[in-house]
Image 1 (tube, rainbow, N blue to C red):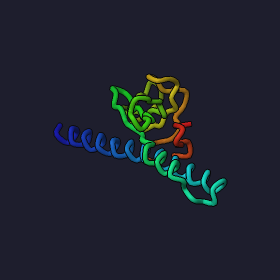
Image 2: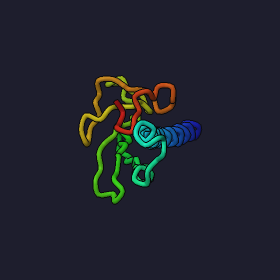
Image 3: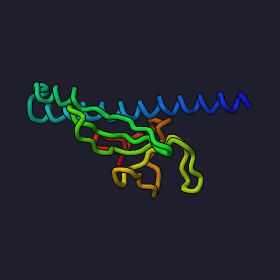
Image 4: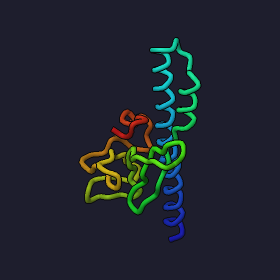
Length: 134
């Protein structure tokens, strides 16, 4: 019985790390996008405005019962928008496993038509952008 509890804790820690990596990938995608904008219009030099925008862009993670919610937050923390959800637990009824990436359908719910990838497999993160999970 203790082994099962240990496995559950280990899986939970691995999932939390994977969720953090997905959030970081979104932040990095924003920085890359800002650099591509600078390359196209400012000879590749990041303006002070763009540097500050990159520094202010943060993805926060809110933990719920079934999902982790990835939220884009403005610099002051007063405005939030949902960038996507990651399954926290297996949901065989809907065909999802812990770690599945889901597009946001609204502020409090994911689109449950199909998974967009897995938080455990960066090769499946084609749908992870700074604008959200597509």
